[in-house]
Amino acid sequence: MKGHPKVLIADDEPITLKMLEMSVKRMGCECALFSDGDDVVEQVDSVRPDLAILDYQLPGRSGLELIQSFKANPMMADKPIIVVTGYRELALKESLIAAGADDVILKPFSPQLLGQRVVELLG
Image 1 (cartoon, rainbow, N blue to C red):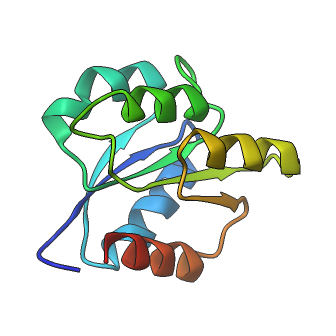
Image 2: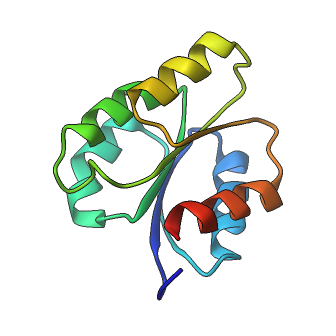
C-alpha cells in the first residue's frame, strides 16, 4: 500500500461509521465519511477515493445503487468496493458481487478482518 490511500466510507449508523473509520485509519488511510447515498454520488468525484466501503442499506441510495453508479463512473469503475451489511442472505451477497463489489462483510464485523481486506484490495 503506497502513501495514504483515501477510503470513502458510507454508513448511516454513527457508531458503525466511527468503527469503520477507526479500522481504516489504523491501516494508514485517509477517510471521507458519508451517511447518505445521495451525498456519496454528489461528492465522489471531488473525494477521488482509492477504495469504497459501503453499507448496503443507506438513505438516498442503497449500496447496490452506489456500486452501479461507481461502475458507470470512469473515475470509479476500477476502484475496489467492500459492502458491509447485516443481511445474511446468500442471494444478496451474490447480487452485490455480481454488480461489482469485491467483498461483502457481515455486521458485526471484525476490525482486523476489515483492515486486512482493505490492505489486500489496495495492494
